[in-house]
Image 1 (cartoon, rainbow, N blue to C red):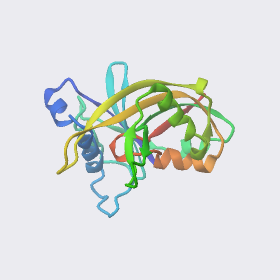
Image 2: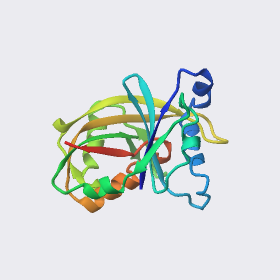
Image 3: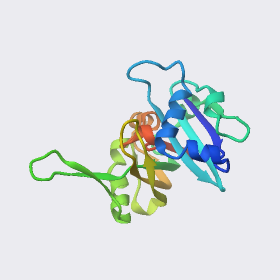
Image 4: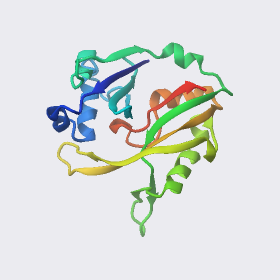
Length: 208
């Protein structure tokens, strides 16, 4: 596994136009793996982080990306990548970690006898409960006092041949405790929740 990062230069108007929706970032990530032409293609998790007034694209993938392609929207054309395996192997059950994750909090509601429709969760309490309810099944535990929502937005998403929609995105930060290492490893490498192809589901951790 590899973890990669590049700073996106959004002060450049051309970049701002080319990366105006999540589908464009999805294409950038997929294009960064030119040798992955299989069907289905390998899972790549990614997330946009806004830190210190800068925007970073973070990618976790099975293979190392083409750094020239991944860094095409940075000021200097540079992207960085390193092996993630040693760090993943060092994670232990019972230990606490600082975490960051962006999710797409939704709920499916059945209407009449038709197939259930998916609705975004917009209330803060509902968004918090959404995350808490999925902690144990993803190999970790935490309480409501252990995390907070640091960012929320409706991000534009355009797929080829479809109308533009706005994706409900919520970013959480806090401290968690690893309960099941095997399950937690799967969460870190395969993500969780919906819209993983569009910047959601990537959980990253640093030992507390």
